[in-house]
Length: 250
Ligand SMILES: [Zn+2]
Image 1: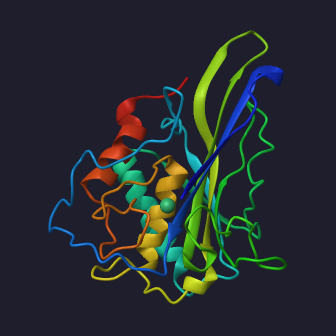
Image 2: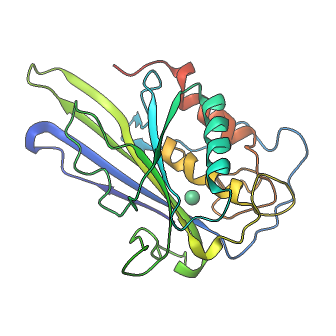
């Protein structure tokens, strides 16, 4: 379900971590979600490397682009609504930089030069397999078969030491989400009672922000789609922990 690949941290004192997280669609868990603020505010998992919590510098703007070439109608509106929801929960500002033709692959964001501008977050619709319109991120991982995989979201974090020996602590610098076109028939928007496209986007955006899966099916970060397409109490608490209330990263 969750694959972590820690990369070497010696050469040039540059550390990198890729976290790939998967969401199974296909099979529906049918959670019995409570009304109101769903679940426990403790139901969140933050991405960590050692003791460091991996999060964005909440005092910087997160730039994102969307590849709509293989997206269903109305996808951009759902993306913008999901981003606004994450922004409100975390206190982090986002900037939509327009569309892109990029389809993120496993290599996306790994050419980062510490201290320089990072690649924008890209959200794209793509198919599994090889060739035009595909992403190698949409492959079976762990116990999640490819056919059930509705989307993948990940974040890329670095720490580095600059030429003056100053340590720049862990921070997420980019991320991506890829949505499987096999699930383009998910209902648009954020309605309740069934899995929706909005729920899928919120879940993968959660991974971009540094949220991991939780074993609480009332939360959006549960690894299977459920009946609710708004963040639960744990999702919201996790986003707050990663956001501005926890302070800037210098
Ligand atoms: Zn997931």
